[in-house]
Amino acid sequence: MQWPTNRNLKNEAATLALGEGLGRVLRAGDVVLLQGPLGAGKTTLARGLISSLTDETEIVSPTFTLVQTYAADAFDIWHFDLYRLEDVDAVWELGIEEALETGVSLIEWPERLGRYAPEEALTLSLDIQGGARIATLTGSADWTERLHEL
Ligand code: ADP
Ligand code: MG
Image (cartoon, rainbow, N blue to C red):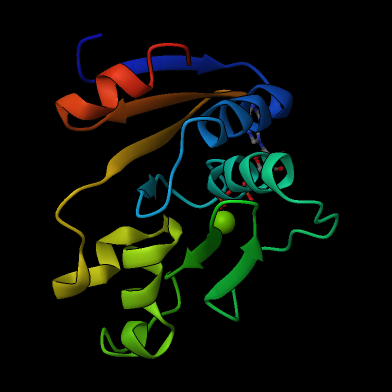
């Protein structure tokens, strides 16, 4: 697989399914940076991922709380939405260090991470294309192997 790789997501179900597929290959310490404008489907993708790995039925956007955590079998999932982050150091108070080290981190608006940006991550960028979405994935060589079934 060559980077970047694109996926056409023709409806919400396709975005949820990509999240579910991604959930199957994640392990503790992984970071997924969810990029794209408001309404692109970042939270939808996170919802697909989280609901496939936990028995959580209410997965809400961390718009105001900035982070929500969920317990999967093998790790905790930390779902961040940094859109409303005012001071980069507040991200430390949210638990970013523990998230990056021991959990799986799904981060909306990762541009706001500043000096807390992880060295290694899978970037999943969503673009609005009419009524549909295009996902563009970019990552290190290691991710090529892990994503080949996606
Ligand atoms: P974001 O978190 O990026 O702001 P959301 O996940 O809240 O965006 O999604 C915004 C809207 O986009 C939702 O109404 C969702 O149903 C819709 N949506 C998600 N994926 C798709 C898709 N592939 N095609 C069309 N609509 C989608
Ligand atoms: Mg969102």
